[in-house]
Image 1 (cartoon, rainbow, N blue to C red):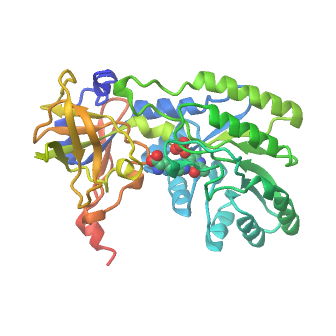
Image 2 (image 1 turned 90 degrees about the horizontal axis):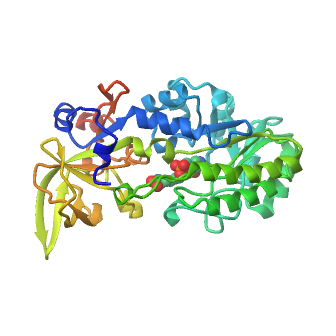
Image 3 (image 1 turned 120 degrees about the vertical axis):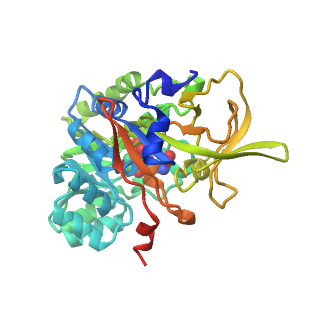
Length: 413
Ligand code: LLP
């Protein structure tokens, strides 16, 4: 594909230079149609049985995006009291929030109990803590199905090498702790890892997970976690995650489970990236180009503080170049490394990439920036976090988060 921006008319007729003139760079630009489309799709992953899709908001906590999720009928999962507060502020009722924390304090557990939010505990110690805080209460546990998946070892969240979940050999101890505190284990959840395009490891984990599920009596819900991938290499024609064939194979496993278990508990999923990644691009200004020892660099104002995924996981984000409001064609490509403005050698956005010629003053546009983009921003090097704007359904450009200022940073002292 020559240009994703053109193919989907991402800016809906707005001129990128007009947008950045008003809101500056670097700038996250969201497209409402794409986000709503993906949020709708995740509610359709299982059709045969009752399903709730919990948007995993760590991928993007912008309150305007959370409101879209609410309107699209999805529920949400939260990782911290901060994320719960965001969801409540966006209008989510407590029973539409699932708290899936890791290594939380007593105060944080008390907070969730007070708010009446279903909580999943991911170790025996944490389950015991929950029992002390809320004896006679109802909660869930996170199991480790023994199989992991994901785009980088840092995002594999199940299997043998991870801090997450309760291991199979400890499942019997769950029942002992539950008995001690008179707890009802209403649900179980898993999360295998993030970003798989090949569903094989996930389905293998589901099989293991459902085998473990049968040890639990009268479950109200089973949550399979998130992780559906998106095509980050779309300019090289990488295809979308094949949701339809995935759903069919998933349902076969569920059919078998339902038959053996005697009924279908409520099924849940927890996708984060899939809902929002493709719905945003990141615009930055090319401030300089140079050659260093024969290598060509394009230096932008998109530092690793604005998008950390490439430096943290060597993640790939496709890059399109915009000059005078036009996407530069990919007919003539040469190797170049696109970097940011942070004082780190690892401040690299796109390493040794085949890209069209880049000139000082161009706009660099990084695709698929909606998930784990802004939510992982920092103010490293005292660079304030960027603004976020939304291209609405009717093509308006609406600011949905203002740019942080130096005064904002000063306020904490
Ligand atoms: N549920 C749980 C319990 C999780 O730990 C995660 C992600 C999700 C759901 C959502 O997973 P998703 O559908 O987005 O793959 N920062 C990394 C991704 C870390 C994911 C951590 N857990 C990245 O930028 O690739």
